[in-house]
Image (cartoon, rainbow, N blue to C red; front, top):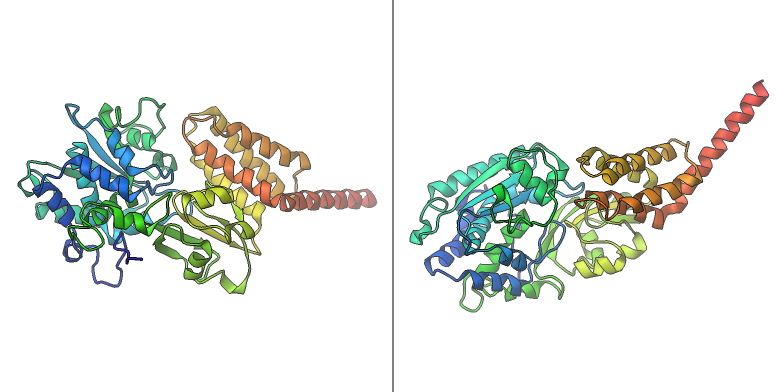
Length: 443
C-alpha cells in the first residue's frame, strides 16, 4: 500500500499552516498545472470519479457526480461553496484542516471553481470557529498576495475570488440549503427541493456545495502519489487503491469519548474499527467497551459486539446497523448511562431545530421531555412505547434530515439498550411505592 499523501495535518512542522510550508509539499502545483495546461474540466471530474471520492461531510455523495450536476455552460455567475459549519456533536476534523492545512482547502476550491465555471467561492464557517477563521483569513491574504487568487490566475484567463463567512453558530446551517439562506443574510432554514442548488443555489444561481475535507482532498488526488509523475497526474487511481470498493482513499476520523488518546486520525477507508480504537489508545482506565456512535450523534449507536466486527467504511457500517456519517466516533465505556446519554442528545436536537417543520419542532421537544422524565425516576413503561412512536413519526417527515437525526438515536438506543430504560422506569416505580408506603405509615 502506498503512503498516504492526502490531507494529513503535519503539526510537527513549524507553522504548517503557512503558504511557504504548503508549497514545500507541492501545494498549488495541481492548480497551476490545471490552469497552465488548460486541462479539460471533464478530465478532472473523471479523475475524481476514478478516485471514488465521496463527500466527507456525512451523506457520502460521490463528488464527481455532484461536480457534474452544475450547468457549466450556463451564462451568468456561478458559485462554489464550502460547508465548514462543523456542528455535529463529536465532529472536530474540519476545524483542524482550517487551522493546520488551510491552503489545501483554498486550492481545492479554486480547482472546483475552474471545473464548474465559477469565479466566486464562499467558505461558510461555524460561528464558534474564531481561531480557524483567523487562520483562514491569513491564508487567503497569503494566497491573494502570491497571485493564487484573483484575476487571470497563471495567465490562464480564469478568475477566482474566495471569501470566508462566519455564521452565527446554528447547527441547522450545516444543511446545505439552510447554509445558503444564512449566507444570503436570511434566517437559516432549509429550502424545499427541488429546485436543487446545482440549478438554483446561492442568490438563485447555479451552486456546488461540498464539505471542507472533500475540497481539501482534491489537490492531492490530482497530484498523484508520485507527485505529478505522468502515470499518476490527474488519474485518481492511487487514491482509489487506498480505499475499498465502495469508497476510495483516506478519511479523517474524530475519535472522542472514553479513549486514552482522543483526536483526529487519518486512515484508509476499510480499516477495522478495532485498529482505529487501538490508535486512540483503547478504552480508557482499563475498562471494557460498551457502545460506539460511529458517525456523529445523529447516526444509530452500535453495541460493542457489533462495532468490533465492523470496518470503517460506508457499506460495512451500514451492514452493522449504523452509518459512517462525518466520521465522528464517540466511544462509551461499560460505566456509561445510556439513558442519560440519549437525553443529552435529544436536548441538542430539540434546541437546534429551526422550528420550520411541525414534526421536528414538536417531536424533538416530546423526545427530550419524556427522556428527562425517565431519568428523573418519574417515567412509565408506556413512555418507552411513546418515545419510539414519536421518533417513528418524525422520521422521513421533515424538509431536511435534522428530524431523522433526532429520531435515529432514539430508535437505536431503545433497540440495543431498552433494558436500561426499563430498569430506570422500574426503579422509579419502586421509589414512588416506597414514598407512598412511608406516607401511609406516617399518617
